[in-house]
Length: 121
Image (cartoon, rainbow, N blue to C red; front, top):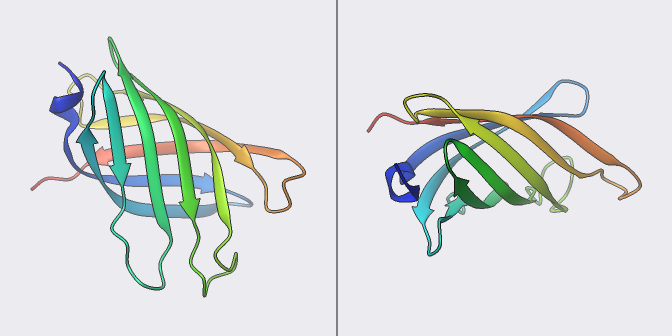
């Protein structure tokens, strides 16, 4: 198993605030040195997510995330960023873990759950 085996479309879901949910479809692409780049499609009026992860044996994904929110949504195009650690399940079709990142005013560090699930193609 290596980062190339994780390539494909995944559904990203994270919890933030008071029970709010953020969801994106992301394409995971292998990079050099066990790196994985996850990018959501850029769609006008929607938020855009970029994951920069490293695959570590036996089943860990760790790295950073960056989201540019929708310019027409509640956060008006604000960019949020932070760190992420996920553990893959036994068949490498889902990962679950935690994120940390700054709040809207950059006065506190927030955290919550994050999951990735491979989409069946």
